[in-house]
Every structure is written in C-alpha cells, then in structure tokens.
Length: 250
Image 1 (cartoon, one colour):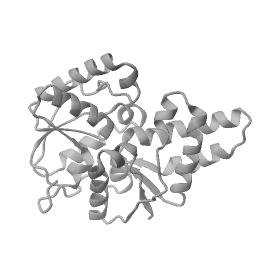
Image 2 (cartoon, rainbow, N blue to C red):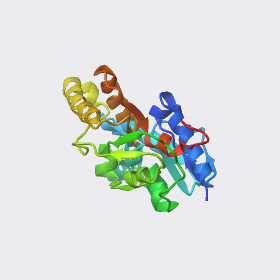
Image 3 (cartoon, rainbow, N blue to C red):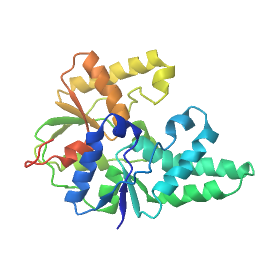
Image 4 (cartoon, rainbow, N blue to C red):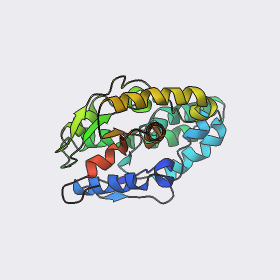
C-alpha cells in the first residue's frame, strides 16, 4: 500500500507539527508514508475567490505530485473537500467549455484516492484505538467542510473516545461555523470575528483544557479568538492528540 501525505499550505507554513504528527501516527500503525516534494497548494483559496481558470494548473500539479499512490492522506477536511468535491466540478466545466477532457480525467484520477485523516484511519485501516495517550479534558469542534461536505460524522469523536486518559466533553453549538470560512474572514471581518467570539465562549464554557478540530485553519481562527478573550483553552489538531503516547508526549 503506497500512502502519501498531503500536508496543505497552512500546515506547511504555520503548523508543521501537525504533519509530523500524522507521520508519527501512521508509522506507529505500520503504514509507510511518503512525502512528494512536488506538492503545493490544492487551489482552494483561488477557487473560493472565483479564480477558476487560475486553479486549473494546481489541479494538474496535484495529480502529477500524487500520481501512483493508493491513498493520499491529509490532516485537513477543507483541502480534502476541495479535491473530492470541487476538482470534478472544475474538470466538468473545462470540458463543457470545449477545452477537452484532460482536466476532467486528471481530477477523476485523484478524487477516489484522497482521504481526510480520520476517514483513512476508520474506513481504510479499520482502527479506532490508535494507541494514543492524552490525559486532558478535550472538546471537539466539527469543521464545516468535514461536517457538511465530507460527512465525517462521528469518526473523529470515535477516535477521541478511544484515547487513553482523554475526557471528551460536548461543545454547545458544535455544528455552528466558527466564522473562519477562508477568505470569508477577510471579506467579512466583523461577522467572522463575531462568530468566532461566540464559538470561543462556548468552548471556554465547557471547562475543557483543549479544543481540537480536523482543520488547522479553523483551529487558527478559534485559537486566536480564545487568546484575545484571555481563555486558558489550548487549540490542538486532532492528529497531534492521536499521535501522543505515554512514552513520547506531544
């Protein structure tokens, strides 16, 4: 089984520990992980801002970088959703515009092989207890892309519930958006900040020591808001919790 890590721009630039945690976790489960150096952005910022044609070269590059892998694993629900949901749309539009079927073919080649981390663990490897140890109280925020586009359901919670030492507490209004929304937070800063403040207050109200998500973009927004409000709750990606052990704490 050939497995590649798609680390994403946010993790590469701001949260490298998350990518490291994915490799640590998967190797502990007996999976050899490759990291294709040719990978770049999946094109989500461009596509969401309306630059569809500018996104097309990135679709081609993604396909070239991950060609031949059985599974492409990413610790990002939003980037996994970009590939799975939007790549086919981009290819279909290009074909409809009379620019050939090549982009559609390229998109079809990578879509069925791309998995968000918790999908890969539960659906492909068939594991829920990954041997993790994290002696803290944690609350979980299901991100919009993971919840509504990938339909991750309870996979993340099932993994968290099997972590030794972890106490999982419910988050009020969990399914409400945190307000990040990619470029939404730039174009609608006031609304984004208000939504983030609501989410942060709910997180703090749980009494949890940490809040986790499957997307560091949302984690960044929630974490920044928590810090500005003076909350003691620590933001952490789910991959880092799952990679934690008694022998090597994160």
